[in-house]
Length: 119
Image (tube, rainbow, N blue to C red; front, side, top):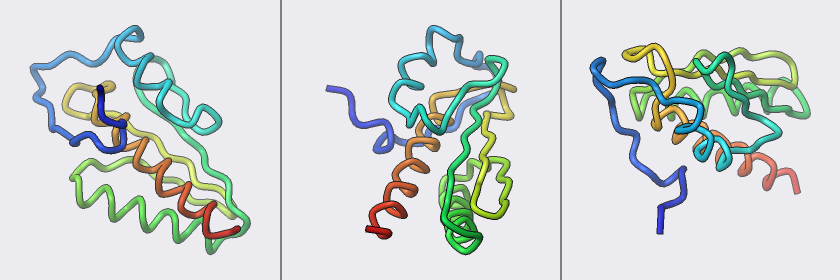
């Protein structure tokens, strides 16, 4: 049995590796929140999370930043009132790697924790 995507290790890749093809990343994409994430131009993941206000969006951004520092895998994060957009790809290969999807799944988990705290 394959471990849940968010529980997999974030493994660094080398510049000698090729980015994932559409066929290779399709299964990984299916494990992400499809209301949030899309693949853009077969190059990067883009996801947008909605929040009730700026404070929640800011708190989420801070948690994503802490995750990025912990894993040393840094997305572009765009914070707006009530919304956070994340763009992510592996710069070493100028494209998508499994680690990008693992990070996205972990962000989905963080977001789920925010939704659970609102109940």
